[in-house]
Amino acid sequence: MSVQPGSVASAGSRLSLRKNSTDTACIFLQHGKCAVYQSRPTQCRTYPFWPEPLTSRHDWEAEALRCEGIQVKTSLPHQQHRQHHNVALEQSGNLRSGPAERDLLGNQGPTLGVPAGSAETEVIDATVPVESIKRQLVLEEISRSGEMGGTTYSDMDELLTSVSPELVDEFADEFFAKQGRKMLHDSRRWRVLDTWTGDPAEHFRSLVLKACPGYAQTEVQLMKQGDSMMVRHDKLCQPAHKAMCLAFALQTMSQKHMHSAAASSLHKPVSVHDAQAVQPSTNLAVAIVGAGACALPMAIRHHFPKAAIDAVDIDAEALDLAQCFFETQEDAHLMLHNEDGVKFLTKHGVTSQFDVIMLDVAAPDPAGDPGTLNSIPAQFLSPGFIQEGLRRRLRPGGVAAINILGGLPALKEATLKITPHFQHLHALCTPEVNILFARAALGGDADSNSGRTALWRLTAVAAALKPLHSLCDELLSEQLEQWAVNDELHDVLKSEYGYGWFSAQDLMET
Image (cartoon, rainbow, N blue to C red; front, side, top):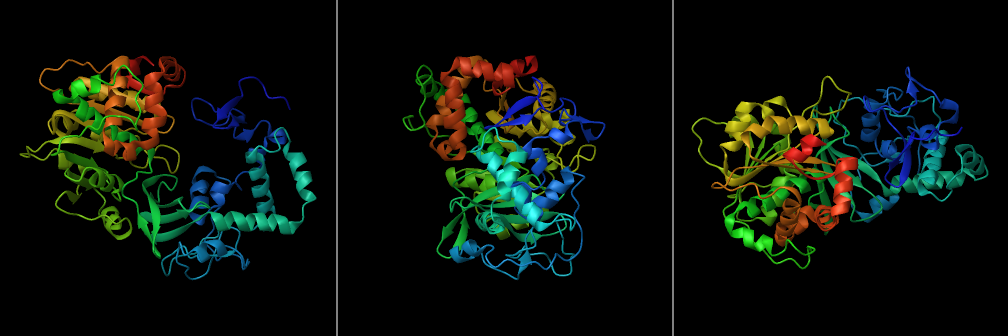
């Protein structure tokens, strides 16, 4: 089948069929059926037996929410064994072994910590033979490698027929030994998962809302210390958290004493490594609403040791899990509050103010696809909250950073609601995140932070703030710096893809 022009889009280093603009479904999905089924590409033929859904039971269940063709049954797994599964991981000592449990292919592996008395979950339909699943996994990995570019699925399948079944088994064994998940906690609402890959540096722990298993509310990197795995509080893993930390650069550049320091770097390329050291205020006050397992508060605590941080979450269990599994500790500089975020910031009679307020809140969308999240609960965009919870609670020059899910439409809607209350609004839009920044006025200042000057100044100050080297890392060095020194690149990204650093006016014109 010849692919019609315009039906293929770029997806990272690979090509993907385009999606409808209205419902994000494949353009060939017509009346609930594939219009090109007999000629569908390799990734469609191998789905759902891709590496990602096969990594663990949790991932398979998450995929089942997105695909009605995947069945999740409540019965004991098949009695199939494999001697080699996960040997490499257990020998490394990175994870403690537990009572035997079956992986997605029915093989014996580490425990997933299912509470006693709960139903086991068989995640592979018995109508699909294990051998076929392994075969599809191998074919998908071959396709992704690009080593057989231009080869059709049928050609690869025929070639694989000449390979011994033992080699296919060996590949599958190696796949599951090098990557997977271990469930440390499984309650009605939350799961705590450890994830590992073949790279010893790629070990992570995440807090996942079971209603939206495809989204990690909190994720931290783990490092081996002796015989234990410890949480790294000096690094942030999630792109939204990294981007929200640019609020510290915006807050710093709003202070009058910073204008000359920033201006000195406005007319030359900015280097993180060569930037002049600039220190933020020593008495920073920070509020983080939607703290979850507190990766963001703990990272800020690590890099701004004198800051006073209030971490707020409406879910008591999430805060308990933060202390049990994510090494979160309260002290004189970090306070945990089990409270509704709106009520916390709009308390009557409270006059204390913050330099930075971060809103990282979302909720399952009952009207959307299963497992999806609302951009931000409506109460956080009400006029009363914006005025009383944000503007009144920010010090002059203070910055509110708001994580906006839902793409450009949700970002524009939030901008329209916040604009009447804040003169200084900017948005950072990347392929991964949309963050809206609202800055409180500082003593009659004019908005000198629009257009190219804003991006130069933000990059200069962010590069000069040493804590942001670790908190923002590649976001700062690989995106902001490139945009700041390359007008043409930034303009193309903004106009063609909606990525870049936008003023409120720019954003509404896109």
